[in-house]
Length: 207
Image (cartoon, rainbow, N blue to C red; front, side, top):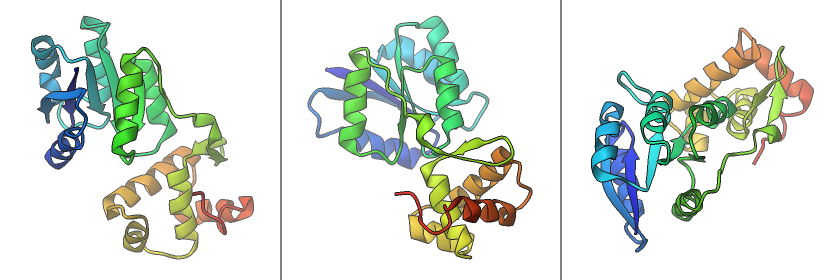
């Protein structure tokens, strides 16, 4: 039986993930935590085989910092970083912190379980960040999700319309756009959209 600890500051996601694993007979959720500050204590008590750790946590300790601390005190502990934001920089941060694997929250139940099993078996599973489009003054990478959003920006859709089209929240769309501007060095969405059109990404979104 694989003992699993789930850490995420959104209770609805904690409940959803715990329920997601119920059909799998070789998985047991031994704990769910909304506060990253408690992870080390619970880890010592429950001794999970794998920790699913959200990368963006409210409070004093982010998922990245929490991963560093756990790996320092429990170096054999398997940790899978998860996030809803498809930003290659998060992958790099997770690797630097010592995480064993990385998965996006939009992944299916089978993908989550496959990642858990393979990570426990010793594999290191991280997205290939070299496949993403490159933009901006520093030739930085944009993820497929960011390209999707940028495509819709080029079609003059509002943040809410983009959110509805991609089944995201308006806040998530705003986060992605702000992140794209910060990464690329563009001061406005218009400038970024113009570059997208010049590179041929405006007409055909990434799938």
